[in-house]
Length: 310
Image 1 (cartoon, one colour):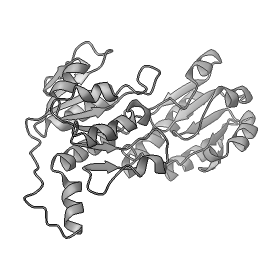
Image 2 (tube, rainbow, N blue to C red; image 1 turned 60 degrees about the vertical axis):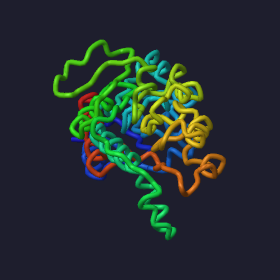
Image 3 (cartoon, rainbow, N blue to C red; image 1 turned 180 degrees about the horizontal axis):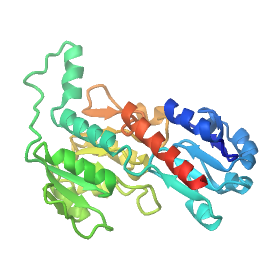
Image 4 (cartoon, helix red, strand yellow; image 1 turned 90 degrees about the horizontal axis):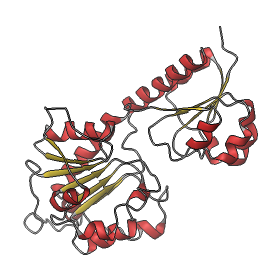
């Protein structure tokens, strides 16, 4: 028998999970709704539950109109698009899919690390341009290099686990982590400065907050002695993008992989600075989105909603 609660889904969800939700609740699904702010704010008053990814801006303006809303399911982990304070004060439960896409992100970090340390983008570009850069570009091995992980939550720990299997030595910075109990991972809790000074690769796994915005900037790059590779799969605004490109052009860093950007989709002001021969990888916010993780994330949120309303 169906529950009479109404659920609104404004971004893409796994089809089987959607069908399971449909069996139990009254569901409206429109994955383009995140782009139509006016319609979303008009209809939200009728719904008990909202399911979003990162495009839907669940701000106080919208929430004030959501008179029946009791539950927000986030198909992912970052909550910077949701006004958490408003939800807390108005008894709206916010549920992220913590840990459900950690394997996907970890695989992205490891594959990007290997690709960039081997200078694959540069070799690829030179080869397709007929240059045959076999001796002009130098690459190195990943084994015994230092990986600095900034933010040691669920995903940061998973990145450490994957990376240590490939012979990387791990430095981890997280002000909320006091000790690391996993003896199988060669990880040392470090200061930010130690990570900047020692790392050959730096991977960022932080939420976007007032404290973390523009945290990696010109002064951070100036401390990076080993010309590291920078990988960002968390939120674009944590790295100052202008300073990043400048650091690459000045040879302060040796490459970068960005899956997240200050403005998404990226605009010409940024991508015009990316030249064909650069040692970099740019992807459209997909590190946590694989077929498998989409199933896990969607099933997890459907279960949490079912438990909550039953």
